[in-house]
Image (cartoon, rainbow over all chains, first blue to last red; front, side, top):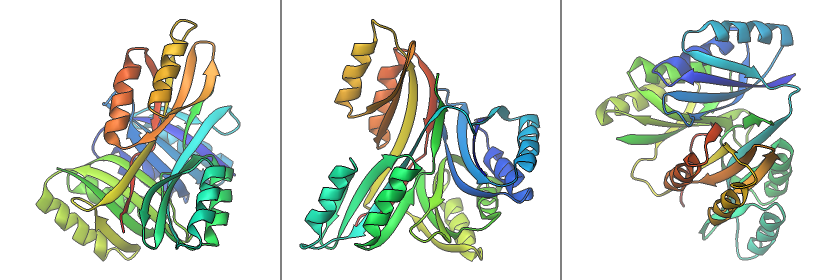
Length: 157
Length: 157
């Protein structure tokens, strides 16, 4: 099962390596990871998506809680939350295909952020299923490059 | 100086911990990190923002290139690129302040993604200076929670 784990950590040197080491040491592959500062520059939030055994993950969460630089750990699985990801996609485009791609960009409320002779670069945000759907459509045109942020999430109030 | 490093890696177990360990081992604090799959599910792209000595960073990049699971490393500093980040911000809001916040959300082309009795959750994407500007405005209302993806970047063609 996939889990989305949100970890608030002290924004210190080496914390990231320690935490990602904890997951890989237990055999979890990290599907995606997004790390950035919070409203307090001394605190960072890591959002980690992992797939693996629920019981082992429970142990990893316990171990995370014991780390001195970890402030709070939330396993968001099953909780009401808002999830978003941003993806930059560079797609092959020529005079013939450009307008068709632009139509799809409109439908998905994505944005064209760069135009070159033989490509368009598109920014899209959304949850997993929306991004997956858009990817599937773009494959037909030829995806040249992709940069995904990985998922971030906040609990609903 | 801040550097944005893009690393294409084999999507394997432990790679993330090894790479973040390489940076922290050389004394670099990672400002932000975003990891996600590319168009090829066997390959992930890590976008790392670090601040530190240029010469030491050059050595780190050389070491990265030697790692067996690393496919390509690009230091984007000084190169023409498209950079984006997504941020979820939960802001205190009440009947009095809600419409003022909504105006700012419009001006910044952000989106309200959740409404509760005493808060609004906003999604905003952009480059560093846009997000910084929006943060500054939201501070006046009271920022309750923040989840940032960290920056992703693609080179312009």
